Image 1 (spheres, helix red, strand yellow):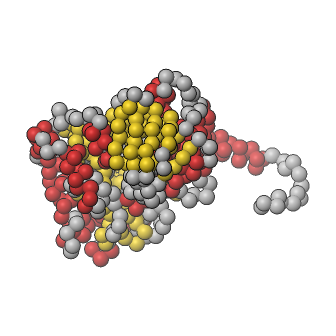
Image 2 (tube, rainbow, N blue to C red):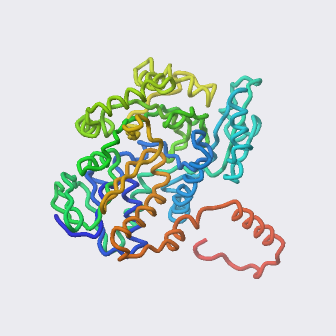
Image 3 (cartoon, helix red, strand yellow):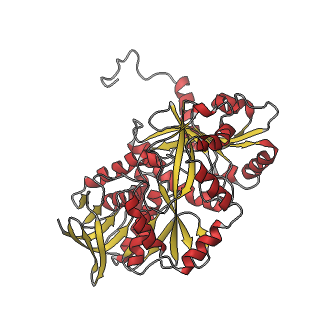
Length: 474
């Protein structure tokens, strides 16, 4: 197996597949290949058991600033629009209520300020504050068994997209593969990437690929490859493994708790599984691990390659882990994996969402959870919150912790524009068609009002025909 391509994408998770879809369907690039080391795409972090299944808009993520929420919102709407357009049977997603819950007289005023004074109510017109009675109507178990004097407030929206990112990844790849200029290679491990006069040579377990431009969308391994090519020397990774506890049928949608400001990890939340609403997941826990992939000891050496074992990396880790908020958090999360002890220690987090839960109601989920690489800046000796991207000479490296999956299409749109610059504007990107296939299908408040007005008009209008038989499809 070998080939010469204008563009080669390494990595068949949602980041790589969304870029494949965008460049294949909406540019005139002559030849594109995607290379994935697993036997099928979406086998690692994009698999639905290995992530929170949340489409992050920034509305209930209380560690987001308004500026970050504005940035994330457009990205989430692009993916939501794609799902609305291409998943009418809800095989890739479900749409349920989601809320962020404030409990007690310290948290409630914070959530009120966020909605009223900090601008989140204006930015998200479907988001609304609800109190105990309405919370109980939507999520009965959140109120059941709770002290009646305890203050409660939630910001709730019906636009809670629960996403099987693995199926979305496959959908992107399948639509891209409809184009004659696209090849997808699975079971193909990249062994070396070498710059050439004309672009890059990519050696793999199945042969050699040559490309004018390349995008490395291989999760934690992206920084590893970047460093081998001389990029990203001021960055290392803090790999965090997320896990979940399971319970039976407690919640109808997503219920988040308030986020601690200094933590880059998602707040503990409960939600119904995307494919089985009778399963409620609680988590994630966040455990530091010296690997780039969950449960694969073979990637310990890959982590050490990225870490480098140099003074800057060690000092950065020491500075980050000595933080008064982060260190206790890390230590607590190590305990959650301990048999017998772990569930008991995690139970109070579950009870904050569902007070009536008892220890026998929850169990550690086996086979759930992935590794999220948090980026560490060794110059600043601090965590870089959010996604990371390195742009080199005719090459892009995407390292995408949360909300990378939520904003995959926005990242793909930006990368497509950068790739066309690499190629001296030889090709064009039809952004209008891209938006028409994605974000233009996202249901907005104005659309709902218009539909309601049309329904009212239809009720008052005389029918055009009388006793007309139904169509055959009905």
